[in-house]
Length: 79
View 1 (cartoon, helix red, strand yellow):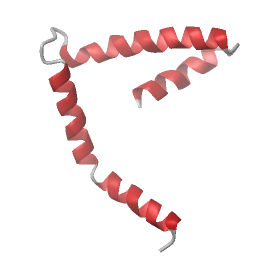
View 2 (spheres, one colour; view 1 turned 60 degrees about the vertical axis):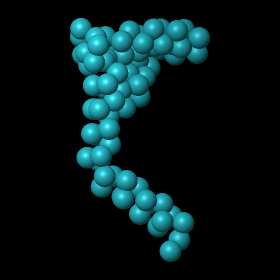
View 3 (tube, one colour; view 1 turned 135 degrees about the vertical axis):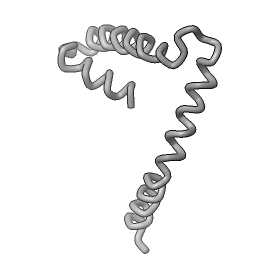
C-alpha cells in the first residue's frame, strides 16, 4: 500500500471515530467551566473578543482589509 493510500485510510479511520472526539470535547468543556456561572456559554464572548482583538491588530500590522480578514480569522478560531 502506498503512503498516500495509508494516509487516506488513517484519515477515514479517524473520522469514523467522530463520536469519540465529540464526547471528549464536551467533557472538556463541562470540566473546564463547571464552577462558572455562565458555564460553556462563556466560550462565545471570549472567542468573539479574541477574534475582534486579533483581527484589528493583525489587519493593522499586515495592512489587510479587516472586512476580508475577520471572517477567515473567526472561522479558523472556531474550528
